[in-house]
Image 1 (cartoon, rainbow, N blue to C red):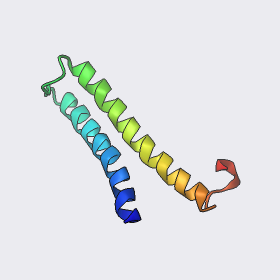
Image 2: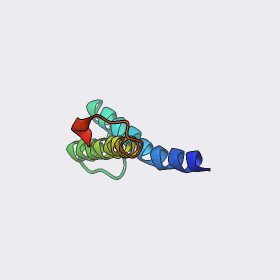
Image 3: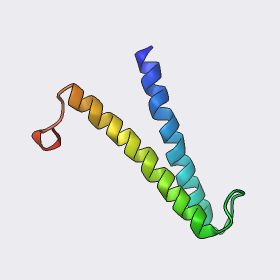
Image 4: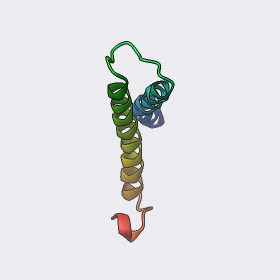
Length: 76
């Protein structure tokens, strides 16, 4: 059960990161998605979603490794 909860905790921010990458890619090709009035706003939102998703996953992994004492002295 713990692994399922951990998977769900990581899955949702992963979806945000993937969606952020997708709307940034669409901006490069000039495809404007519905809720965004400008391409630059679409790119900025995509970048924020990507950084937030990847950052959450990285923080989760770092927290888990600190708890299990698997990090170097630099990250303690």
